[in-house]
Amino acid sequence: MSSNSKLASTETVIDISGASKSFRSYKKPSDRLRQIFLPNRSTDSDVFHALKNVSLSVSRGETVGIVGRNGSGKSTLLQLICGTVGQTAGEIQVNGRIAALLELGAGFNPEFTGRENVHLNAAILGMSQREITDRFESIERFAEIGEFIDRPVKTYSSGMYIRLAFATAINADPELLIIDEALAVGDEAFQRKCFARLEEIQEAGGTILFVSHSAGSVLSLCNRAILLDEGEKLADGQPKFVVNQYQRLLNASPDNRNQIREDIRNTSADTMVEERDELDEGVEVDDPRGERKKGLEHYDPNLISKSRVEYESRGAKITDIRLENTTGEQVNTLEIGQDYIYRYRVLFFDDFENVSFGMMVKTTDGINISGATTSLRPDLFLPTASNGQSIEVTFKFRCELMPATYFANAGVLTIMDGEEVYLHRILEGMMFKVAFEKNLVATGIFNLQTEDPEIQLI
Image (cartoon, rainbow, N blue to C red; front, side):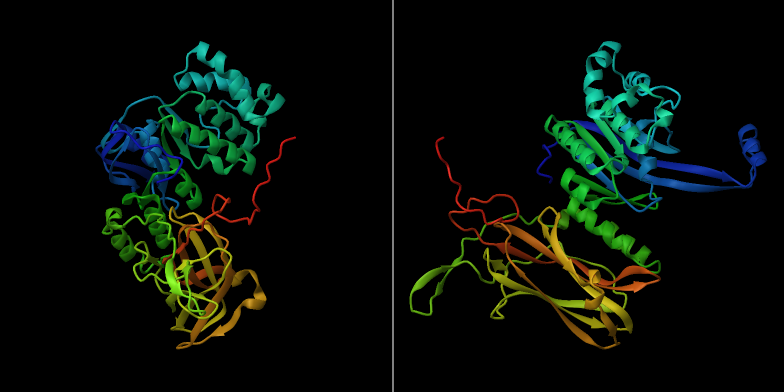
């Protein structure tokens, strides 16, 4: 669960049962007219099933991220919830005031000024004229578009559209806020400002439905995630589990995609044990001088990743992922400030050129912290890899992570048709900890090696 999210209540805000949505496409305009006036006669049209028998419920206070490939039905689902389109089948019930950012400029009249559009859009969201007047200054201040507030919206950039739309939506005090990839348009400073406001809404117990292609945003913002693909709900559960399955599906070859879809559908998020931070204070070890001392660095055989996800192999296989200290001993409980080696092996089943390797360290919430990849340095490419060849890959690093539990990925890539392609990848292939140390003053994820603070009277 995101550290920013409050626990959800048992009150249901969205209840969807067997929702489906189909669209017809016609080969010529006369077929569309014939369908309107003679609905019982067949026409030369194709039916596209955008959403297929989707059921889900969202409780008050939840922040739910929806992920999926382009065309998976994400935007259609949000439109059904907002009521901008009607479902072909099934039932949808929504309780509470909705504020939605579905697409760029939705709800805005391009001929009106920003000020006029705020009044129009806020009224559509259910705000009274008094509420709009009282909150207009806050809306204008948040949007930060200056004198453009009194210019026609058709003169706005895409970023200005989103600034004003988001500022209006969040000031409507929505019980349900729906966002469809809209925040990807703004600059970094505005995105951070928006996420800070979303965190305030979460703390106040608001409900948020959030569509994004950014795995990091879903992991950091949401306490639940849903994976849609080809109009079907494949997974629903912990964000880390769902995002890992989504990335696995994204990297599936067309020949294996249906099998991976079935695997995901049959893998319940409830079976994934949530690994929690349990700080290790070390174990007693022998000192070479015959004395006993506290040894923070060691290997714990019970420290095993239960959230490991493998991509399909495309001619290579990663094995034997491990961490070692500088003397070659395998460890998975590390000590701050010490040097370590992250190591794995790759066996090739085909011939490849320009092969690269990578690793990534993640938090228990699935947030990428730091990693390395040889794909950024052409001089570090493996020029050729042959069928049957085995390669050992090592990444040396100094542990400056704060005491907590972490995971590590491993990947091997090549370039096909000008794009990087994973030959094999393992998400959260190993789990490790950084041991607790007394007298630390650092906080967060990284140890910046700050000295003891100096406090002086002046």
